[in-house]
Length: 261
Image (cartoon, rainbow, N blue to C red; front, side, top):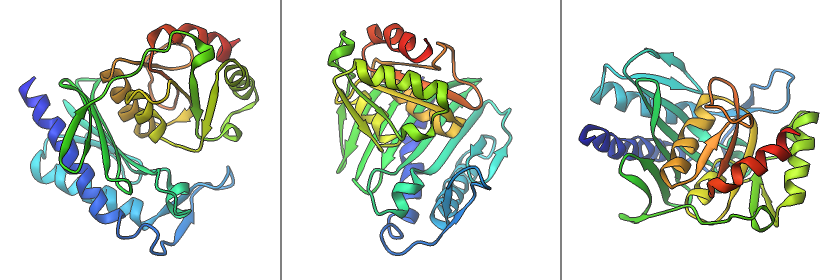
């Protein structure tokens, strides 16, 4: 446990290394490429690549036996006992649009289990970390414990997804049912929405088509804050996956029934 706690702190160092690369580029005129290959606009910037390279360099220097799975540079020792799962800039569309809700996602998998999830918002100066020691929000050197809020009634819930246009038709129908059953909907927050669930400001996030670097850190953060996060089918995420994250566990089944009807 002490070693995992030390690695919680190390996840903050990794986010800091990414921030030192990405923040000076943000809103400073950053060119981008489209890697969507005809499947829809999917931008990538040099900030994405350089931020992940900075994280990987720090891991290799400190823990050379650890594995890494990252969006930009793929897998390195993915079968290691400890594997870091990285998305250097989650929300690149927001990044190139000058919107501050892009995040750096850092997760740690230990013997197959995601044990640490850190969601940093460098443009806002916030970091949300979940792990064995619980869930905290860090800002200006101060750590504040966070917790998902009670919300036993679906009709009182605030729900989020990045963009309903990303759903295929069956998933879009499920999303529309869930949206209609809840009180308030917020869109376009990317992974910051999961941080708001963990911090007790929102209640549900539902997304599909996520890669491990998209879902690993948010899942661990929400769980550490007392919430639940599973696929829409109610299973442990694996590979490309959907994710349903709820702050109040009593909402899981009612949300799933609407999504999967």
